[in-house]
Image 1 (cartoon, one colour):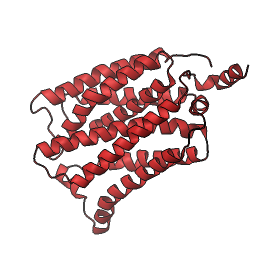
Image 2 (cartoon, one colour):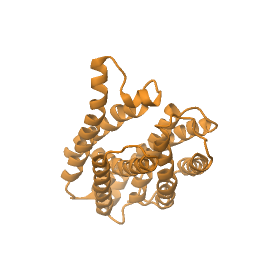
Image 3 (spheres, one colour):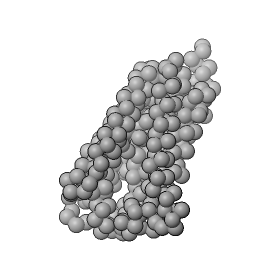
Length: 287
């Protein structure tokens, strides 16, 4: 298989993303009183910043280094963490109260969107499928469907009663928001992505493998961020049901195990190739 590293525009975009993310999380965490959001939202924002700074930034930096050297494993992780940052700064750009970092949030939004979309287009899904080999897909299909159901039930249990009663969900009302961007992102993008990924994977389609690897990395980072939010909420004296912590912790741990299992299944010699060169790569391996 022909070796090909990340194109320079995506490398530069990721490097700029790392710098701006360090700026955003550093100021958010260490400048007292910087955020102007409702008190109920502050622990969640601080938890997100803490996880992003201590886990997501190092993970993206390491994955970027190895992805530029042609590692397919690192490429998948790089895309997954970029997806996490895209989700994070989409929520900051649309939901966080206006502050001096607003233009940083919007810049991170388009940088991560550009990198994620371009990176997915260049990912050779057929090569990834061949690299994973005969690994059983049932655990990945079941996990993604489970997450889709749990997230759907969680949000519909808040949304549907409010719609039927003609009121606003308490979480939106307490935060003083017109609508929850998290509802919109999860129900409009994340849940359908899990269902589609599981369907494609079950039907042995190459893009099912690609979406599964990327979504696993994304859900592990997002799950870690949720646990960091719970830590800040408990520290500030807010009531956090322990069953929720156990469930989120268990799902994050299970997702991490599945992600590691998926990455280990990729042949150690697999390399990143552009989707446009798929047929060439197949011919080279057959010769």
